Image 1 (cartoon, rainbow, N blue to C red):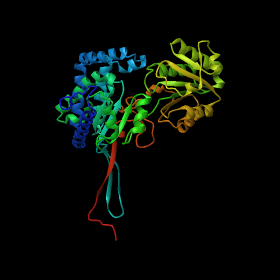
Image 2: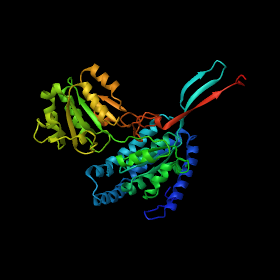
Image 3: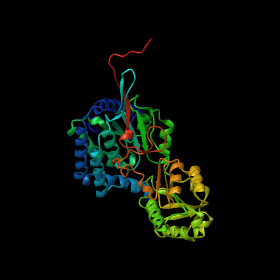
Image 4: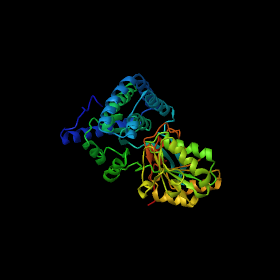
Length: 434
């Protein structure tokens, strides 16, 4: 798309942005019609070629990313934001592997989801079809350019991608690899479009739907971005507002297991939405579990903010205030609270949680099953790290985001969630009685 839609840097007239975005949407709609009928092999070829190009372009991608990193550092970006923005050889290879994994997955388009015959002889199939054109608005993480573009393509959808201004140069190099894959597979360039401007007016145009050409919007970023999308979008939205993720250490929790899971859930990567933010501990194991867990986190460099009982475990624990239970830290900070058993833990999650991801650590199967069935989150885990809240870890090949709503898609939004369906009815001259 760089060839057809020139890059518009800040300062351009708003009508230029509006017109460019409208043209982008129209091109995406045309591409979506072609993609809906594209054979599986051509889509897979595009993904495999793009994966290879990501690897051979590693040096160029890192150089572009360093431009973005330097600008972010100058602007005073937080450590967590810098981590989300940063690309290295391992992360680029992971992007490439993600594209290859998506290529290897079964094609979701054209699956017969159900089939039945009516008494009058009508034969009806419910068949998976693409959603159409998907707009993705994201911040920082340039890998989303590859992940979202690839998932949309495999599911037969055209994608309009608007990356963050902080990842502008990184995303353009990654996008060029995707476009070259499309061209090699004889698929339209507009199948994966990257918005060619950092002007925020482009986001407004996407939220208005690009003249009716966007079918759904997926925001990936901070709370302010998601709030704006949810409030202003005139098309459906797949999103989560926050990832206020809880771990509950039950009275029947194995201490060593709890230590391993809590450490990984909080500190493996602190800036992702599946990172644990609140630790709840059953009061009956305060004497055996709470101290070791708190000390472990502190010794690993994690700031702990706790209630009175948690503070009594270690003088380094800071006082937790009401705001802490509502906070998605996205850095090495965790809040800790002692609760009077499973019910109080679930009540706390219902009050302060964001319906994203929550975990129970216990050897009591009955308690685990109750937690899994009663906690109303998109992802609920038993004895496993919350950092498994990821489409790739679910075997989806990747994800376009995590959805916490209750309509259509919930949890990691992978290939199946990027499809709708239609009914295909076959008759033999039947008519309805007058």
